[in-house]
Length: 364
Image (cartoon, rainbow, N blue to C red):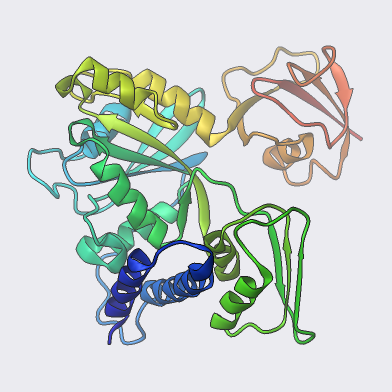
């Protein structure tokens, strides 16, 4: 029996099994087996034939955004509208066959936008070059999931399932579980909160499935068996996702209103160029970028050329971006902006910068 058959067998078994107190151990074991087989499916085969044309595009700019969606939902039209890159768009499916990069210039930042070929159902098992598409999506900072508003929620459910099965977790944070395999000493199991979904016996069964008999496990939140399996496997990618519903000019106002109120969702129309500016604003929030301006002593700040950093960046990070030796010669910095109590404020290396702050660095 091949891996695909084993996976489908386990999935059928899970859907057949009733969820109650008596079957939770059985379900936990099945989920662990399923995750194990899916990991094997993702590993490239040893006897791979001649390599085809690669997909990956060199990372450039301040952030990377991947466009994922079914064929003919408007990904290439969106790329052509947002960037100066022209991606071929036509009324037939699979117009785009490789990865086409473009650059969005917004608030002084260069955001790389990748137009990926359309995904079809079964992409996580390699159908329609699905594996290469999903592998590129794993390297992005944010995923834009392009959906056809006329199709309702069918596409969203299918795409989430495909991404889930290859270890991409959308809009969730990493489970707060400490896990460390050891050489000996058996299983050390603790929790700082009452657990309603995982018990010591279930944790032990799941670890045995992965041939782990000695480990330290500490639950700091009430997690599900699925989240615990994610921690054991360790190659999961947690990323933000914006659900973009295109072609809203073809549906009723009530439906547009319903879709727009859903969490992490934006409604647009590429054909009529509706709501694209709001999508850019939301994308900026999800990327968590800030722009910082520099100032020389006795001169006005340089507002033409800002430094793009991630939210939560300190003065030390800014020093490294300006020049790698600057942090070692740093004496103090003067900062103007919302991160200070008064302007200018004299700060050290650990001061956290905010959007549109101005900084003047004084060396020793």
